[in-house]
Amino acid sequence: MPRRPRKHSSTGYYHITNRGVGKARVFNEGCDHAFFLECLRLAQQICSFKVLAYCVMTTHFHIVIKCNGPIPPSLFQSVGARFSAYYHKRHKCAGQIFQGRFRSEAIETEAHLLSAIRYVWRNPVKARLCVRLTDYPWSSYNYLGKSDDLVDNELLCSFMSADEWRDFAQQEASVRHLEPFPRRLSDEAARKIIRRRCDYLTGASATMLKVQKCPFALAACLDAGVTIAQLARILRIASTTMHRAFKKWGAQPPPLCTVEAATSP
Image (tube, rainbow, N blue to C red; front, side, top):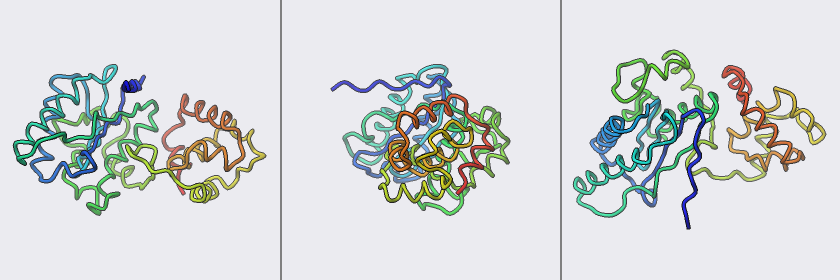
């Protein structure tokens, strides 16, 4: 069966991730994390891309990058091949290390980009590997506003200052749609989230989807893991109407401060 073609981002921003085969630990020691990041630095010299954020966990990794066009095919092929050769020699083993080709999520809006970066930074806290973001050494969060040969801090701080990024990263946000391997919520759980965040919506208020504030509340439900199909079913709104509302919102994303205010529980 042929592979599904990757979705290209018109903005050039992508959320890249992959994990070990069978969810196995890949990064067992600090030297494993360090060598993977070195592979990424070497790839930067070959391919034209910028790194905005990264986090190397024990079983997987997350990277947010910017490319001038589609993702170069050789980017993570070189990273994967180089790291696998090191890993086999270091740990005296053989076989595939990562689970197939890397996954890429096209990022089309600024709101999505900022949420993706925060999600990457907060991954160790979410996994309970640390309490504070600064406690995890293999995250680019520790290089905010500092000189680093891997992360493009100039590009990162074109969106907000380093201090503003730190404040933004401290705000816990559930962004299940950014997870590489998300789990679907039950309708009962989805209904509770919708009731909490969209209590002013009813089945008779489909026309409210045309109001600017409405998609913000609905987007908060997506952040919490509710699918568009569940939103349509539970709110008794036609799925086509729901999709049109999100399409319109995504094409003209609101200011970040408005999104953050609307997505607060």
